[in-house]
Image (cartoon, rainbow, N blue to C red):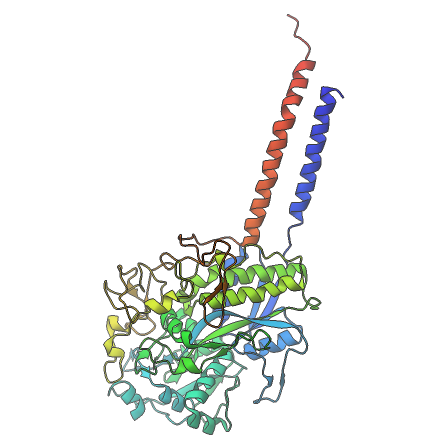
Length: 560
């Protein structure tokens, strides 16, 4: 074979390899649009993540119609996923409707935590009241029409003798099958059963609030709830919904008395403390695996806790023959959920939610892996807790909850019999931790029980006019020194304890990890392209010298 023929063969091999590699690259798992519906309580979190991943090419559509409708849509194969604050109930006791999966295989996975808050609209003499405090018993009586005026003695007592104006209370409730209603009435039924059961006429919680009385009104969905509550014509209104809605409107919410006699707000720190006592179903054979029992949350004796704290869940299809699902849809779901329960958690505190602890992040990843079991073509590589940066994670110690440990103690003026707090003492600290503590605290201020948060304040107090509970402490970043479990580490979702170490024998990577900003699929594609380019350059290095040599040898000498 001549030198030129050999060179031509090398070029042919190069071209063939290039075609093969390009074809392999184009065969990376595709994505397709997925659609879901459900909880308006969790909607602000879900839509935040959707906005974040759109730039990476993921198409996710979510309609917030309420938890009950979300489960119904999923069971009817109308959607690809649901978001719900509770699980399937079998039969809804309020409506008598079937509330089952109707044979569609599914899994629950926690996606976010938060607090059900109480936005209120109360002005007198041209001035808005922004420092309202209410006990749980008072709330139960307000939403069962036993307390009907803002100057009621029980409200006066909650506010340490300060008498509010003689304005009629207008309870505003959800008309749809609402997870917010489920969380509120679960609290009432557990802690104040005599008040709630007399009003409802039976024991148990409901998603459909029983509207009674001339003053009580209803609106459909969280957006309509908060829009009505904040309108100029709504003086006297009090309602309930996830804290993010009031926060987005810079609107005050009532501080709620906890079991230790302190009035607190649903900040990411107070919610994190509260949910350390949530009991999670850890029986993997149970249809209710990972669902929550909040009775321990309501009774937690900690100054910092916010009693009406809870988790929200995504319901995903796990059947291999699911009629709506394809490889491309499952891949979109995997990548969206990877972002949501991993990097996306660091956005939750500042918008009014609270990030998941590591044990529930791990449990969510385990549930996501069922999409791979259903369809082996789905790519789940590099999608585990080893790639997460989350404000609850503690460097080197995955069994600890950083937010719960550094949650600031409430000021003395928030204790029953004191206050109410005003001015700077009435500011909600919502930003992510920085400098080893929650931002907005003075140097050396008390953090968690048993220790003092060191470092300097990472933010400044700002927010609502009048310094009401809608105010925020701005600034802050991810948890300092945050690190995560090494790949291969297994976390017990019941306790958060490490039950199996990673390959190195260490539970975590002690070095501080950068927060990944791209999706794993995009990262994998970049690595694939880099490999292709490397091989092309190598083959060119082999092929070009003979080609150049042949070209030079065949050149005719120039006659002078």
